[in-house]
Length: 141
Ligand SMILES: Cc1cc2nc3c(=O)[nH]c(=O)nc-3n(C[C@H](O)[C@H](O)[C@H](O)COP(=O)(O)O)c2cc1C
Image (cartoon, rainbow, N blue to C red; front, side):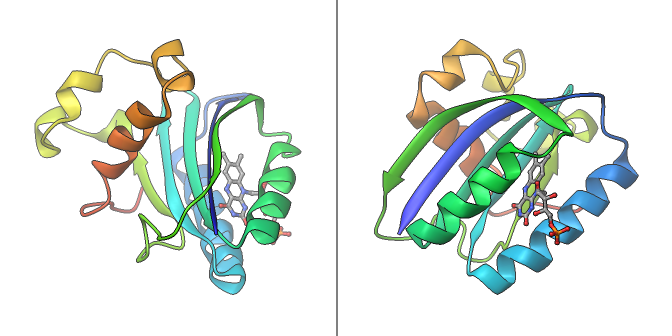
């Protein structure tokens, strides 16, 4: 199994409807592929973790990288793992723009960091920390 984490910029801001559509499709596909993960959206930027079989994750990440709705994909992590961090989520999701920081303990320290900030891109452990904040309480758009 591998875990793959990247950040990217949306080509234009996503509406809630567009995010819902993306998520619906992602969840349907990922369930079939045995892929789990978490997607965060904030100010036109994404951070996504994908975990599952190596070939499946690499093939999906290549497909996602070709998606014209986002650009500047930067791989943060691509490494073997022995267990899933998001076993219950074919794709968890959080729109951080809609969130009151006090809803998620620990999030306030990340408030001022764009998802594509160097602090994240060069620091897989920090990305993991952020992504995991939403493990127990991800909600719809
Ligand atoms: C930021 C972002 C994250 C995405 N995540 C996933 C995902 O986890 N799974 C997925 O199947 N598609 C994901 N997509 C969509 C894919 O790029 C692609 O549109 C989709 O897999 C095509 O599915 P279809 O062949 O069922 O239409 C994502 C797209 C973007 C822009």
